[in-house]
Amino acid sequence: MSAPKHLISWKDWTDSEIEELLNFAIYVKNNRVYFFGHMAGRSMAMLFQKTSTRTRVSFEAGMTELGGHAIFLDWMSSNFSLSDIDFEAAYLSRNVSIIMARLKKHEDLLTLKEGSQVPVINGCCNLFHPCQALADILTIANDRPNDWKKTKICYIGVHNNVVNSLIGITAALGIHLTLVTPIAHEESIVKEVVKRGQAKKTLTWETDLKIAVKDADYIYTDTWVDMEFFNDPEFQKEKEERIRLMMPYQVNQELLKHTKAKVMHDMPIHAGYEITREVVSSERSIIFTQAENRLDAQKAVILNLLDSHK
Image (tube, rainbow, N blue to C red; front, side, top):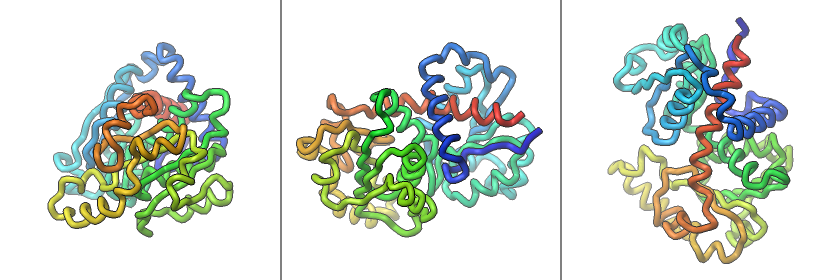
């Protein structure tokens, strides 16, 4: 059996592999019935250290629709919290065909990958969220199937794991990404990924919102505070400071007057902060279609990785 291929970030995938995966995701979405039963007799372990709605539902529903079984594992109620991660991964991978892990630290995800004998999917960590980025571009490709490579995306918000994965996938596909990121801490930026975007000339930065959104096809925003910290009293001071700094960058109806762009958000949404409820519910919003596309993106990843692991 060949060594397993993983999806930890786009750094380990070639441009052609990423485009092939996207095209496959488009095919899976348009031909769901063809893949019923493909995962019969196979199980996926889903390991969660972070809270989740979309990641858990899309992977579990996706595996079910493919005819397989998904096993939910809470980090704190498993022995991953007690033992060496690679040892637990070595055991787990002898029982399942694939592992999806949603962990807080990228380093822990790499340790899990080293111990696993089966493909590992990054369901989100502090540095990357590749499954989200794939669903984002799948959404755009379905929205404008004839010229999606000419798309211009404007991301407004905090430089985070979603941004790192967006930079990687847009660089691979030749899609232009403009970042408006008033908060961009060094520990959140993956320099290797940024250099790739710069080298491909798909990545630029802007500070003026009106200029940034003027020619954009899609405006993308995300929470200003990581989900595990949003309701944490110990993070309250940092949260208030972020809100003070970021409120001028809210995606609202006033901003949309300066652009014809559609609006995206990876969810969960904190309405009234990074985006208004009015915009979320507006005709310009494709947010819920974007979230729905996580299902087909996850299916494509599962099928791709298991097809390569024979």
